[in-house]
Each structure stands twice: as C-alpha cells, then as structure tokens.
Amino acid sequence: MLLLATVAWGGMFPVAKATLHTLDAFYMTLIRYSITAVIFAAILLAVEGKKVFQFEARALPLFFYGSMGFAGFGLFTFVGLTGSEPEHGAIIVALMPILTALLNWVVKSIRPALFTLVAIVLALFGVLLVVTKGNLHEVWAIGNHHGDLLILMGAMSWVIYTFGAASFKGWSSLRYSTLSLLLGVLSILACTLAASYFGAAHVPSLPQVKEVGWEMLYIIVFASVMAVLAWNGGVKQLGPLNAVLFINFVPVTAFTIGAIQGRAFTPMELVGAAIVLAALIANNLYARKAHAALSNDMSATCDGKKDFA
Image (tube, rainbow, N blue to C red):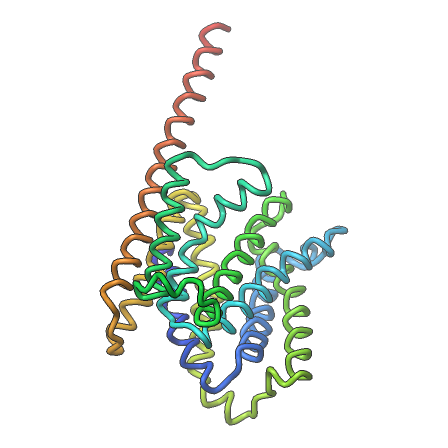
C-alpha cells in the first residue's frame, strides 16, 4: 500500500506538468480537490455515518489546516510546477521528513539530534545540486528558481497540515482528511476567483477539460483518493517510522518516468538526487534505531518496576 501510494504521487508530477499546458494551476487544483472532496465525503458517510460530519467547535482550526494542506500544497505546488521540472518537484516534496524535523524544532523546541542535523544539511545541499544542475552560483538568482521555491512552500504547507492532525484526537484520519478537505476547497475557490479577477487564471472550456480528461482521472483517482487511502492503511500497519521511508519512491518514480520520456538529466541532478535519498534513508534508519533503543529502555524500566513490586 505504501509503495502504491508513493509511486502514484511520483507519477503525479509529470502528469500534472503535462496537464498544465491546457489547464492553469488554479482551475486544475479546484477541479481536482472538488471532485476528491465529494468522493471522500461519500466514503466517510459509508464508513462512519452522518454523525461524524460535525465540526465540534473546531471549524476554525480545521479551516486553517485544510487551507494549508489543500489550498497551500495544491496551489503552491502546481503553480510552482509551471516554472520547474517534475523531477525537481518530486525531490523537493521528498524533503517532507526533513521539513517536519525543522518545524518540530521551531514550534515545539525539540532540537533534532546531531545526526539528523547533518542529514538535513546534506539533503538541502542535494536539492540545491538538483535545482541548479550543479551550478551553485545560481542559487542567488531567485528569479530562475521561483518555481522550486513555491514547491518548497507547498511541501511546508503539507507538513503544517500533517502537524494539525495531532490536535484532532479521537478523529479517524479519514474524518480529519475529509472535513479539512471540504473546508480547504473553499480557500481554493476563493484563490481561484481572485486569480481569475486579476487575470492570473482563466476559466477552462469544456473541450479543454475533456482534452486532459485522462490526466485528471489519474490525478483525482490514483494520486488523490487511492494514494491517500493506501498511505493511511500502510501507516496503520507498519507505523510512521517505516512508512516515511517509502517517501523516497516519489522522486525515484518521477526520475524514472522522465528517463522513459527521454529527458536527459545532468550528472549533477542525479548526484544531487542520490545525496537527498541517501540522507533521508540514513536519517530514517537512525530514527528507527533510536526509537527501538527508547522502547527497550522503557520496557526494561517497566520490568524493573514489576520486579520491585
């Protein structure tokens, strides 16, 4: 399930890039999440019933996190993708575990271990190699990398959304996802109307929508509905520490599709991608080892208390 989810997300980037030639990022995001919201609402209704369609005085935080997770991630990522490459977007999104550690540090004052800090530096260096194709002196040319920066903002938006889930104790992941998505669509609609008013977005015609019908079907059914359900199911069975390791298949899939399509990668792009993946894997293995050691210590403490009793 985790492999299915991450491969679907990796495939989303080249598919979305192709779709953006016909639909602009605003209307593509609006169509994607509007239909996804209806599907998730139907699933939630069938699984948990009507009683869970209540905000329980949490409408405001739910609206905020839904706006971050769906409007923020969707719009920043797809608008950014118009000025970036699918493979670059995938490698930036794969930084989410690293971004989570940094946000944890800022919000909860939980300083990452030295090993994790080294992994963060290596991963960021790898991303710089990818987006600049090894020409590191271009880092300061912000105009050349505005798309990559927007995708990074999108990835951070999703990390914030993920953080929000912890404050909805007693809610299933399906309920949190569905209700936050329903409210998040309102933000997407507002942003799309504003972009249309200022000429940054244009209402697509029915023939245009039909032209990218298969692409939108993939983005909605596979990269949105199926991937999220599969990811949640996989996390439930293997746990978040094991699950996050699979995020590496997102850029691997995107780079593989790019190679099949004939895209020629520079050696530095491949080296940078390899550094990012190596840093993410190493940090994940370190985290699992630390978690196992902590669990053993807690078990030993509990056994000692039992013996004393």
